[in-house]
Amino acid sequence: MSDKKTKSILLVGVGGQGTILASKLLTLGLMEEGYDVKMSEIHGMSQRGGSVSSQVRYGEKVWSPVIEKGSADMIVSFEKMEALRWLEYLKKDGKVVVNNHEMMPMPVIMGKADYSPDIIKEMQDNCKDVTVVNATEEAVKLGNGKVMNIILLGTIIKAMGLEDINWNKIVSENVKPAFVEDNLKAIQVGMSLV
Image (cartoon, helix red, strand yellow):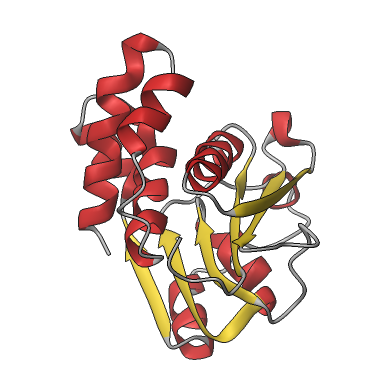
């Protein structure tokens, strides 16, 4: 554990994208490394494509899992609109990693809301450090579209300087044996994208 200052990471997405699994693996890795870690999850009708967020805070001593507006070191968004929705939680010098993927939320499908065509531009106008990745596409290239969440975990590992943690051990102990190899490849792909 090199940096004692508390760091805050916000993972946001839509139900079914694996946001919670990525958060749990991140939390387990941080704990293994000796950090005090607090994690909280919010499921907004996640089974029906609703918003899902997970807040992970780690450091020498963390008192609360809650990330206040304007205090996240990093936002990782599994879906474009969710990145924009949570942008006010980012620190002034924070990082955003956005999966360039659209999942129409229920209000848009029902015609009660619009899905902005310029989400990436809006984020870049409001934030200095925005990295756009095609994690969904990269997961398909690996032969398993479901590892998109683990690719995004890889972007966190690299962007936050957490490469020294034994991710092979964390994945091997917490993922079904049949999927360990795909998940380990996905972490490497994610790390190469940022």
